[in-house]
Amino acid sequence: MEYKLNGSDIVVSLQEVHIDTVVGESAKMDVVKAVNYIQSGKAEIEAGVTEVLNQVDDHVADKTAEFDLNASNKTGDFNTNASNKTTDFNDNYTAKKALIDAEVGVAQTAATNASNSANLSKQWAIGDPTEPSEGSAKYWATQSAIAASYVAYGTSDTAGNVAEKEVLIPEITELKTGQILYIKPSASATVADLTIKLNNFTAYPIRYNNSAITTSTDDLVWNQNYVSQFVFDGTYWQFAGRGYDKDTTYTQNILFDRGNFVSGSGTYAISRYSLCLQKPDMTWEKVTNTEDDYSLATDKTVNTHGFLLNGEMLYYSNTAVLANGAASSANTMYRQNSGFDIRYSMNTTGTGYTAGDYIYLVGAIGVDGLFYLDSTQWWTNTLPSTNDGKIYVKIGKYVSGVTITLELEHPAYYHDGTKIRVYGGGGGGGAVDSVNGQTGTVVLTASDVGALATSDVTEYTAAEVETLWGSI
Image (cartoon, rainbow, N blue to C red; front, side):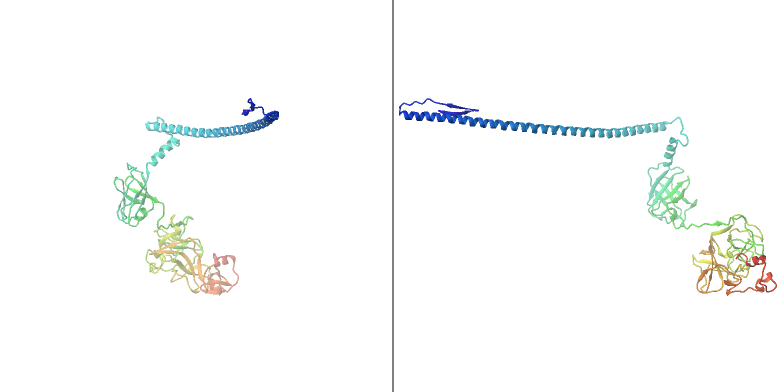
């Protein structure tokens, strides 16, 4: 008898048992008991197998359900991700397409404009039956193109001591009148009669203020590493400016533009190039009494008339001598001047002066309140170091040689015994700065007043007071 497990079934085969020898009834019973026991065990085994199979089925079912659930969840996640990715792709695609469409539109517009411009240029090149009207886009485009063809920039490496300055600008194939060059030289010029040789064209002279270049103007027009402008007029390269100003001091001359001024009615006429002071009657006289000063520097004597201390100080620039009471020509009198000859108004040639020194008129305040020039030395280039009782009125600065300037303002100075001060005027009784060299309290008497009184009096009419004090 044997047992076999066949799938879910247990097969029990009982082979026939032959008992050849009868051993007795008890032995037979033992065999029967054994068979029953085996059959009972078979039933238990079958029940156990069935239970195991059931448990396997349950476990398989549970795992199948879990797998199906996981598979469903994974499928859902995949579908969700796929949907999101699809949405992102669609959004990105839409945005990118919009950008590409916009760029394509710009490119198409540019291409269209370029094509139109090319066609228009071609039309202008072959001749447009309609001439461009002044102010139109076509007109200005044409003018700009013409102007651009006349302007060029170049450099020059010619040595400073060589007059012919070479400039190479291959773009210029024809030298036309009106050609403008901006040139930056590597070395300053040190010789006169400069020329510019552009490419292989003829070398033409440079002109500064329409004059040939000298050793005084060479480095003004041709200076190392500074760009200068030149314009070709058909004969010369005219210097037209540069990007800096080299060692130039600008001055300003200011005309006394109050109509024609009048020479004083006294004995002093106004002669050429003289310095003139204003009188109380609103006329002007020169500072000397010589009829015709010219350029002599030793023979002049001072004008002894009284002048307004703060009146106009003017320079007469004409050569014609003005008779007494005569009116001047227009534009001949200056309130400020960059330089005039000192010899026409003082007995000096400027010897011993230093450039930049101030030049002063020297005098004193009279009892009538007017300014009187010193009789022997009515000019100076120094202020006093002690109280000398004199007033110093600034004219201007010494330049060089015999030249001084006339400045616009003419402050008056004096020394008070301690230091130089600006004179503020004074006069009459009481404390004053100075009167004819006197300081402190000055009392005016009949002799001081002169023709205004015949005896010592202390009362004056309004007219007498006005005449006495003048403009103070």
